[in-house]
Length: 197
Image 1 (tube, one colour):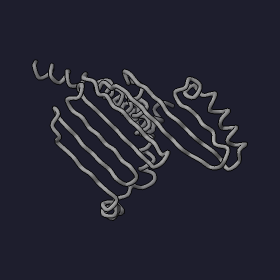
Image 2 (spheres, rainbow, N blue to C red; image 1 turned 180 degrees about the vertical axis):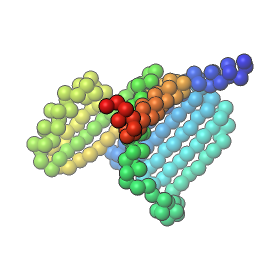
Image 3 (cartoon, rainbow, N blue to C red; image 1 turned 30 degrees about the vertical axis):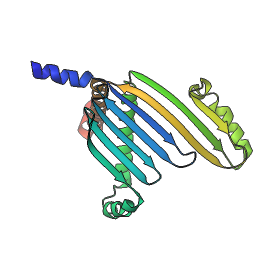
Image 4 (cartoon, rainbow, N blue to C red; image 1 turned 120 degrees about the vertical axis):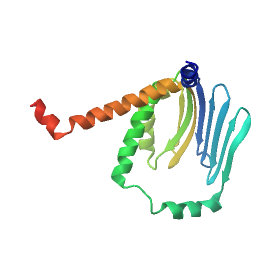
């Protein structure tokens, strides 16, 4: 009884995460995840080719790793032979997209702010894109600030996202996606198709 109560408590404790992405001056990515009001924390930051990863439990650091540009060559050499085929990568991407969409719908609280600066070689295309984006809800309500650049080709992104996730709800969303995939594969089998005719 105590074990099941403990397992239930683990699945309903909140997971808070923050995501920041920017390429204004240089490519920067930062991810911060905290579980059970900070009892467990995970931090990931990347700037150009420098990566820093830290993990802590009850305030004590249990993992730390810093990887720079010098380590990139070693990793690329070891992973060159184990690259996935394009078809498998495409299926994996579709699966992750469906899982991400399902998990996103279970977020208890979410906050999104972004800045987007885009410019094409032809100012007319930039103006048309500006008109299209202003009709989208994310740009209309001010969540994303759009700055057109008519001077030339430009692409600058600055995104900040925060959310609170309940593991039990996320697990249910993932199981729902897996059940849908299993159903699709079952319906694609030849004997099942003939039985419906």
